[in-house]
Image (cartoon, rainbow, N blue to C red; front, side, top):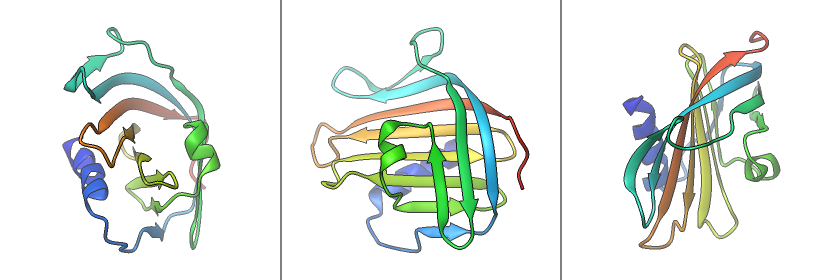
Length: 150
């Protein structure tokens, strides 16, 4: 889990436009993901963790991930933002699926990592990126497939 948090942090701190698209594994997933915990950083909380017993969050029902070579990666039913924006980072390989998207002002972003072997899904929302009062919301889910990889 720490490995994936480091990947997400790396993406936010590294503004170099490296190869952000790498679709090496074709994917067609339909997932149901159960919310497990969230880590919140804002004016009230400094990276405080809350479990599903402590905070009410929706499960991700019918989260769809579609990846096709050479550069198509679509995530549906994660958030309204991800549904309507072009993804800046799109990676799909045998181990993970990773996405990241920014708003036009680059002051809001969402990223997500899905680990194929464990079914763990991490969704990070960052608000006020250009501010000293940056806010983060990192949600963790455990997912089960409704279909198989193609």
